[in-house]
Image (cartoon, rainbow, N blue to C red; front, side):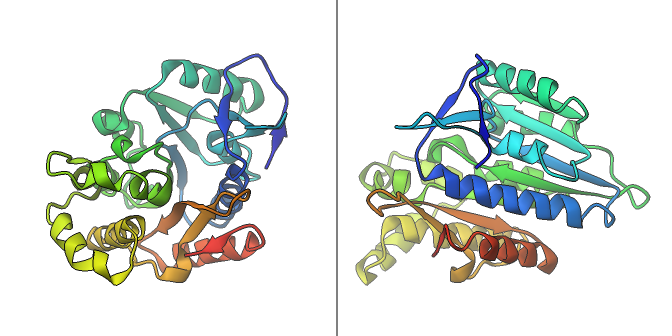
Length: 278
């Protein structure tokens, strides 16, 4: 993790397990930005839940950079950054930090629920063509299931884009199974953009699979149906709480290119002392 000092602006809070996520984001973002530099005319970074850019690790005095500033700090900068969050105070703190510490980067900011404002994000992308090519790396780090709609993923997928996605498989989905399986709850349907998941769960749950694991596998199928390469079990990263070893969430990477998957697997290997595979 990249440690920073308190600068008087808003600082988010993160659990001790965040180091694993941030290190993997750092590893992949640097790999992507550097390796794609001469392959594409324009490299874009999008952070759908960017927050303030700083987080204090709970129970410690450590303050660290979070995903948007990790991406801004890569050796070979992206050609453009788009930072999104529904909290205007967090976006204001992030913008001040970017302006102060990374004045050389080109950044746009989108405030609002990303599922309602995804078209604004699309408008901020360059106009690509055969003469001006571009590739986007999009980080999707929702706080909980309710924060993301699969339709948002599909909207962004109209462009050449790779996704790193946090799936809140245990810290939210597994923990709140009783609420999510209720007939009047549409949150799973919204996240997966599928209506028959309850029937599939009924067929699966007696096989010893947890609801969280079932959700991850179904999400994987949905991404494959959207044209992305399927992830195999050893290509998911399971993040655990290092204090009690309880599973929290999965990190997944989706690309339509085998090269993208190769980078992801290399990033996993580069942080293999800190992560556990699915």
